[in-house]
Length: 220
Image 1 (cartoon, one colour):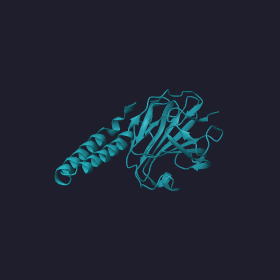
Image 2 (cartoon, rainbow, N blue to C red):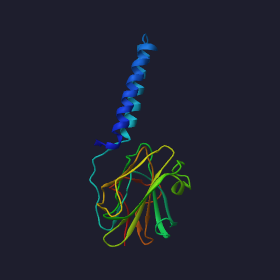
Image 3 (cartoon, rainbow, N blue to C red):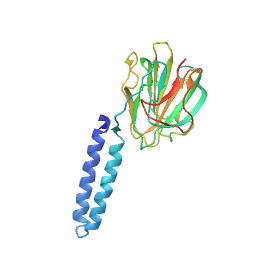
Image 4 (cartoon, rainbow, N blue to C red):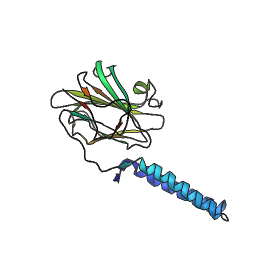
């Protein structure tokens, strides 16, 4: 396991702030209470571990397959439905949504190999990720990857009530490889995947996904 570069500043800042607070409390509040000092240190360590785990990247054997659509994120499947994708395709697509809790790995990975044909960032609100309007009103990005076969898959990173910053590493015209990082959502939220109607969906509501590993669909 390793730690993601996006967490470097946050982890160092958190550690320093907790250290200073513990030292000040030990000197001015609990100088004669070793039990309170011990409890304070334990609480601080737990908080630091929680922050650090947000940025972990576990070692994994990634799944690859030309016709396979791999989960772009760790989390839980919360939506599988036929819907109208109105930003890019402007027609009906099969939507699969993965909710990322604060305890999930927060790296976002390319579900297929191909060329980035479209990218756009939208500033917005921070509604809870399961809110019906979060996919159209929250801070978000839209990425469309075209496979060698010509099939296009749309990904949408959506910030939530806790997530306050979306990171992306792709741009239009860029070739990308299945399983490589295309972005990061700090402290979790949701990733929507829009697929052709004839795609075979391999997951169901409530399934837990592993980014870069779980096959969520098969393209025809």
